[in-house]
Image (cartoon, rainbow, N blue to C red; front, side, top):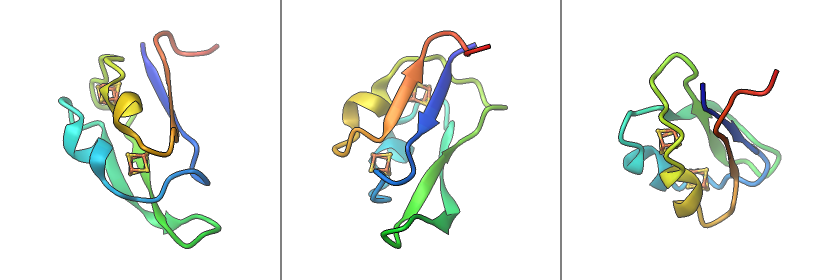
Length: 71
Ligand code: SF4
Ligand code: SF4
């Protein structure tokens, strides 16, 4: 199973990745980071394909995509 890790302190909450994800795995969260930005959360129950579109789009390099879930 692929896995996406949001580095919350790098996220500025722009929402680009949320709009771009074809499987709607990403959503704006309710919490804010140290800079006061609401950051995205990745829904591990949705069907992430590991396509990495979100990671390529993010201007702040806040997303790490792992093709296989780390043990
Ligand atoms: S890797 Fe692809 S499917 Fe998974 S969260 Fe990112 S854009 Fe969505
Ligand atoms: S594209 Fe990057 S900075 Fe924008 S909401 Fe997604 S993770 Fe955060």
